Length: 265
Length: 299
Image 1 (cartoon, chains in turn brown, red):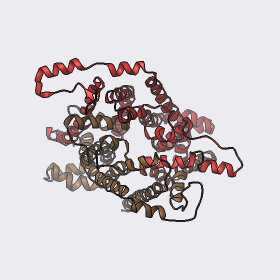
Image 2 (tube, rainbow over the protein chains, first blue to last red; image 1 turned 180 degrees about the horizontal axis):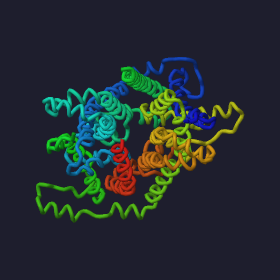
Image 3 (spheres, rainbow over the protein chains, first blue to last red; image 1 turned 30 degrees about the vertical axis):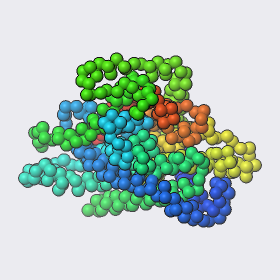
Image 4 (spheres, each protein chain N blue to C red; image 1 turned 45 degrees about the vertical axis):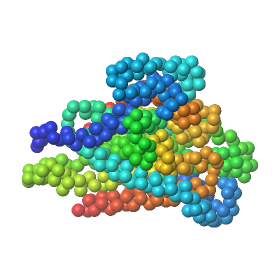
């Protein structure tokens, strides 16, 4: 007997969702505003999108962000998968506590601390700061998220299937690639997307670790926002929101279909 | 059947372990070291620097150069203590408001029909995927003196409110940005709750509120703890929200580190603030890590 939501529960959900979505909706609406002022509706216009595609610095920043995101998310997913395997399959190894600590700590560690410490590392080893230092930093931060997402899936995966493959003569690596990997693939894809999104979004770590010529989109947006509200930022934000929302909803629908298929079979 | 453990299985951990040791653990040693150095007019702007070519003598010179000046300076200058206390205050009050806002939401969601629950969960997570910076920026357009909120109030014939460049603006930003991090852990414990316990409580004569207060709430405490830690720890070091919504008078440690580093070019001071922030957070971080590990093992 699970009771349905009471009027109070219902109201809190509605208000909570309004709180979460109203700012985003307003931002999208005003990206199509012909007027430069936020409060004045000057009619529907796509002029800010036009301005955006004329803005070379903004386009460069988008390019840098995409390159950093693609590479760092791929590295993070690879390392995160290995870390998840180590955490869920290997009972006790030397330094397990330290290892799991290093996996969970970056999830909550304030970004300023991570950014500062990574910068000092690059200065100490004499690595010239640029797109590669940002990429390595993002991979470090996001691999921990990837590991947690993949581990959650691995824990619910029936280990005996992999063991059966081993008994049938597969090497551990073959068994992993042929049996385990297809099974955890949705989590691996979700982990990659999460890592990519986090990299796309990061301002603080990128600001510390970037060098000349590696200004990312959030850094560019941040410097513009400090100068005041700018409709061009609304336009680039709307594009980003649209891109991410499409990706997340598509991933959700794919997973839903898989779940329905699982239930039917 | 459990396969006898071979040392080779641990190899999977090797690459991520080495990566994290190099890019996560080792850098903290550098921050600690730098916090004991002096500011210098050089690139990089601190001294002493360790010169490996001088061998042991170089190490001795380096060690003699280390001092607690950055920390002494922090104790003497009241602004650091003020920003430390103010950070803790923002994070604590922010976490409190988040619990009050997030709990009813999570509770309501867990009582919905399964299909609806999935959709609502999706809706809570979706903003998390859109840029943090952009969502905070959206609030500027709403909250600034000539922004949308005051335009709406004027239209309704109400007096304008000052909700920009002050503490309430920072709280709005914090609650907004961290709401999904509070709702998700709460939802996950509330959703898994055994319904027969609620029936039992009702059979034993509990009212709806008593059932909640004496059964549901105590059982949801692990979720409360997880949500609170997940919000509190990063909020203490938050930079973007106080910087964009809080104006120049708001003090928070994340902002202090940023200013010392980028505006004042005082790397040792920035490192010292970072070390103190880290020292404050180390216990909550360890508690969080233990809890997460236990949660995953239990599943």
